[in-house]
Length: 222
Ligand code: SAH
Ligand code: DHB
Ligand code: MG
Image (cartoon, rainbow, N blue to C red; front, side, top):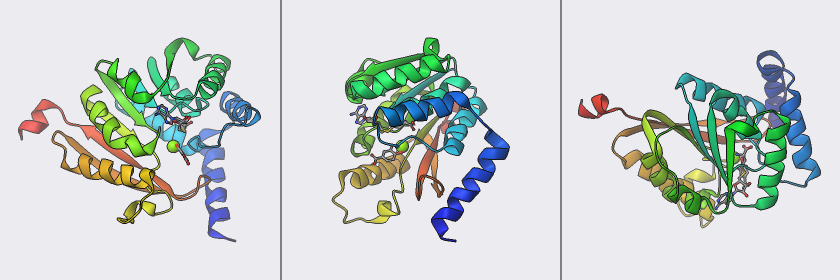
């Protein structure tokens, strides 16, 4: 058994016992495939992790950068009362809109079509959870907005921070890698936020998340 197929088997096992069948999510992936969208959605267990994190921090307002077909958006919208999701490509936003309607979640989600930096400039705090999953080269800029928009006690999650281990290549000229490295280093140096990163393997290969907690005033004073 190759490592990658064992990762798939383990994902399937936990999916079967802890997540189960989910017609809305299956339908979303099917519509995305039919529309020819890239299969860059989070894996089911990662989507449920987003859902759990949102519930664990009592999230009501969630901000997402990078909607694609709305797969992660569905998970987040099930946990929260309001999701704002920013998506550059109108065809992606259209499929996501259809998927959210089919999932019965359209009334909780606002998709802002256009460049995330432009959308971000129009948004005001407080968000309880921010999920960064758009163009990774711009993560350093997105971090500044996320820190501005997340309430104390809120959570910032960034996807695709490992990319088959490329994150440790200090000489990489891939802007996604340099973007994630600058993001990570800025996050580590930022005041008022504490973070970690977790590597993942599974049906989406070898990748990982950054998880960050924005500190409340009491902690910052200690
Ligand atoms: N969060 C989704 C996957 C997002 S894939 C999920 O897990 O289901 C990344 C998305 O970011 C793509 O749809 C891409 O079009 C979008 N994107 C890329 N650059 C962007 C930008 N500058 N502003 C907003 N969205 C962007
Ligand atoms: C890519 C983007 C993603 O958000 C993801 O989860 C996987 C891959 C990409 O642009 O290659
Ligand atoms: Mg991603």
